[in-house]
Amino acid sequence: MNGTRITSKPEPNGHSNGHSNGDTGVPLDHDMHNGWGTIYSCSGFNKDERTRRIWEDYTVSPARVEGQYHKLLSDYTTQFASFFGGYWPITFHAHVSDVLIPTTVASLILNTASTCPLVVEDPALSPLLKDDPEPEKVHQFVRKLLGWTDLHITTPRLAIVEGIYGCAFGPLAHSSPEWEYRIIGAGPSSFSITRDDFASEDTLLHKLHAAKAQGCVAVVCDLVNASDGSIFPPEFFRMLRNCCDKAQIFLLVDEAMTAIRCGAPWVCQRPEYSDDGHLQPDLISFGKGMAVSGIAINFNGLMIRRLAYQRRDQILQTIRFWRSMVTRPIALPVLIEALGILNVAEKEDWPARSEKIGRAFREFINRRVGGIGQGKEIVRGLGAFIAVDREISKQFRVMAAFRRCSSWARWLPKLNSPAAVDSEAIERCLLGPDAKSLRQALANEAEAQGTTPLWCFVCGIDAIVDDWCRTCFLGYCGTADCKKGFNAHECL
Ligand SMILES: [Zn+2]
Ligand SMILES: [Zn+2]
Image 1 (cartoon, protein in one colour):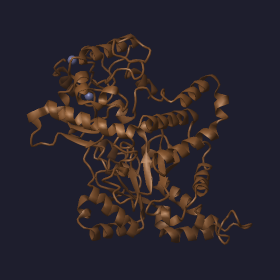
Image 2 (image 1 turned 60 degrees about the horizontal axis):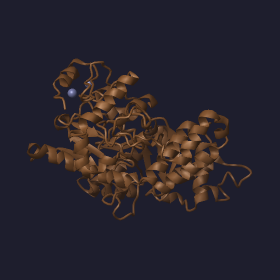
Image 3 (image 1 turned 90 degrees about the vertical axis):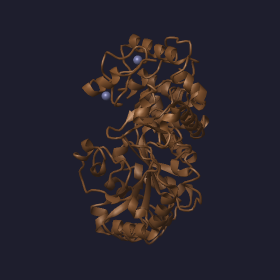
Image 4 (image 1 turned 180 degrees about the vertical axis):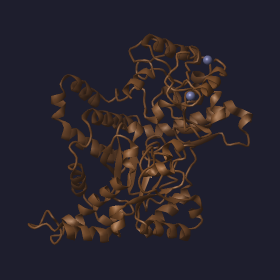
């Protein structure tokens, strides 16, 4: 992944292209793919002096930085909770598909419940306060507290709200819209909640009671569909929170794609989704641009608050218990990077910026497409998660991220490009007078480094061919279909 990051843009001190301002590379490049949204910024965490220094230090003296591991992990944990308004990162994983595994979610909930103040501060229960720990007693107490049966413990399931993309493997892959994922789905399938179930609160509640009775430990939803950019209606989200509360089932929002990029730290914190601030989700899964994937816990969540966490030391204690199960919760270089990204996101206020970027891009696209899109929806998504009609996206000659079956192209611009907040500047850089020279600079850079444009212009997977366009800096993946699409492009 690091290799792709390097080749996607000119190095800050690399070949001069006449546009580089030394800080952020080009003002705006046409890479709207950005590693499926894993790249928030073309300067990484350069702008964060502290982590940049730690990183440099690590390359010369890893042992010295190893000595700071606990401090760095603790700083990351508290800064994360502060940036994301009280959601504490607890468990870390390599990919978000590793996170949304029912047994992992169930174990995490059991850990949070078994180490909650109702247990550890009760002399009759607490393994910390008793000489003769009675784990069976704690277990019974926790099951009662959560309303769980043997089913939740032995074969936990997740209930998923239709539309959520699903995972690349494991139980959630059963419900993927892409057959390549479906055929490797394994484990008990998810319990499906459809749009029809939102017909009324009674209908939904009935469904959630059934989900819980069948062993579901949490409901998983996303608010912007990762495949086509459609929006989960805020009134549905409100209904879902109410019903999860009544059915006593945890609510997990998958923010792998939407964190930071959609006008708020979490998209579920946007005003339309958090209007009353009353019932909040319990868990958030994150990943992609954050450098590390995982789950964050909201101790004010609709279910978690029943566990009575009040103080910071209680929260830090349960986090410590969970992390002590593994040898090392997060690898040191990943931790440094994750901390750096978080710091820059805060300093440069990426959530607010992403809203401005989304507005500017939508203005630009609507202006360019003009009459063509009339009567037809051409742009979806929220903030800097921009879904563009696949056919229309082509005319912009940008690299976008596609789902194979989807008729939408996803534009995931970098959040720090100076031009990205101004629709006129976007036009100038992507199609206007600056476009050619900007792309020329990228092409020269690639030629010098022996690389190619990263993403197939037509389908969005890795571009590997050598006959890429030196004028537009566009390539393709090598299939006959994409070759045809590529050859049909009109040069800038
Ligand atoms: Zn292709
Ligand atoms: Zn061309």
